[in-house]
Structure formats: structure tokens, C-alpha cells
Amino acid sequence: MFIQNLRAKVGARLNGDKEAGFTLIELLVVMLILGILAAIALPAFFNQKSKAGDAKAKESAHSAQVAIETYATDHNGSYVGAAEAGALTAIEPTLSSAKNLTVTGPDGTGVPTATGYRVTVEGSSATQTFSIENEGGTMSYPCTTKKVGGCPEVSGAGNWGG
Image 1 (cartoon, rainbow, N blue to C red):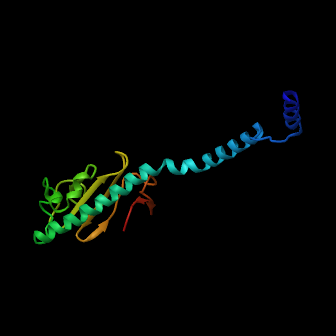
Image 2: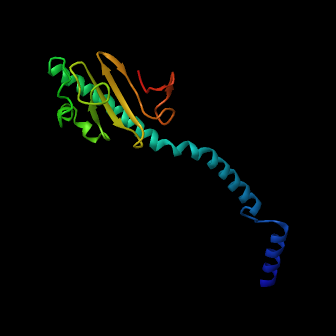
């Protein structure tokens, strides 16, 4: 009886009956296809952290702009004093998380004047900043490193909004 069962099993195996699983070639082909798909998809995800940092910096710059305009509304249209510690965060508490937020005069130095200011926030790297500048009612949106992150080149200058 044992020999008949053994003979039946060996015969079934030789005939290909009850054969299960994948061959080595099939597994290698599937792994090759997965590798190609990963090589195509992964580079698209590598830049996302820096793009998110730049988007957050732009959002913080806009929030600072709204806060400084609110400050001017409360101070007879003048931006003088808006650079003092806590002046803008008292209006917009989320600015406390802005990365290296600075408020200066419209030329990027000094303090805000009665008619102008510049708010600057650091982007995803220390070399990338996004600013909103108001000089006598004329708005501009300069950024430091052209063609990097969220700073496109517009007419030879880095300008992120408008």
C-alpha cells in the first residue's frame, strides 16, 4: 500500500499534477517590473519636503502682511512700530512659528516707515527667503534664489507672487 501511494505521488509530480508556486524567472520578472516602477515614481517624492517648507514660508509671509496691515489700521495708517517684539504676534499668534520672520523698512533695512514695510520669512533652506514688500502702496514679492523651490524667475527677477 505504501509503495503504491509513493509511486502515485512520484508519478503525479513527474506529470506536473499539483504543481504550485512561481518559477524563479517569473519572480525575477516581477521584481524587475517593480524596480522600474519605483525608479520612475520615487524621484517625484524627494522634493516634497522642501516644497512644503517653501509653501509654509509663503503662507507665513502672507499672514505677516495681513497682520502688519491690521497694525497700520489700528495706528492711523502708519507701519511705524510694527517691528517691535510681539507687535505682529499679538495680532496673529501663528506668526510665532514662522521661520526667522523679520519686519524691516521697504528697502530691507531699518524699520517700517509710515508708508512702507518689508516682511521676510525663511523658506526650506537658510538661503531661500520669501518677502512681501509694500512701498507707498506698490506691492512686490521678491525671493532670494531664483528657479529654486517656490521662487520662479519672472523677467530676470525672482518674484513669487503678485
